[in-house]
Length: 212
Ligand SMILES: [Zn+2]
Image 1: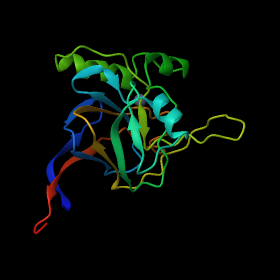
Image 2: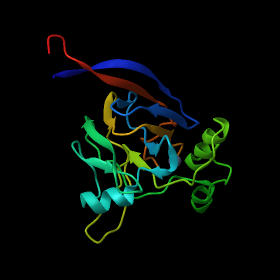
Image 3: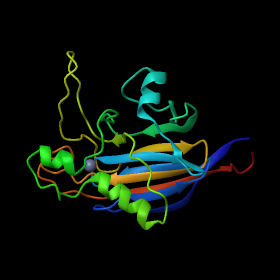
Image 4: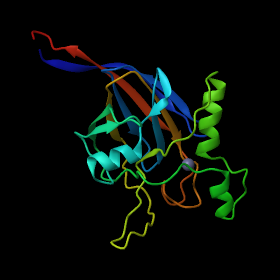
């Protein structure tokens, strides 16, 4: 049977906070960088067990690469596939190495420890949703470009994601997708001179094609 994708819901991923988006098994989530260049710290948790989450180290070790591509099955901390990377229209890479920014990282940068940060936003979102706050895993830093030199050193450069570029993922189990537009603006990972911005999300479900 042929299927087609049908729009199910859509909304904003506002800046300044973390969003928790339920995604049922079989559904697709499109994360749209509608304004371009904005980095999005992204996590996925098994809806039935927050102790199981999308694991960058499991993915890197099993896929044997630092950057994931459409067609890849992304693994949980228990080593099972929980997401399929369906599509990516952006030209950039999506960092899999860097921890979410936190008060300590801004202090180390010489800024105030009170600087808004993805880690506090993550914890606040779970607390406000009345859920137990899980440990903060290494995020999948969508649209964040961290070039790696041959000697293993990292650098950073502004995201090359264009307005409207998107990443599409399909859930293999019921998930909570957790997204935090990164408020880091002093290091211009989200564009030179650009304040933190939100993104958009779209969920799609697979429906039988007419006549199939
Ligand atoms: Zn951040």
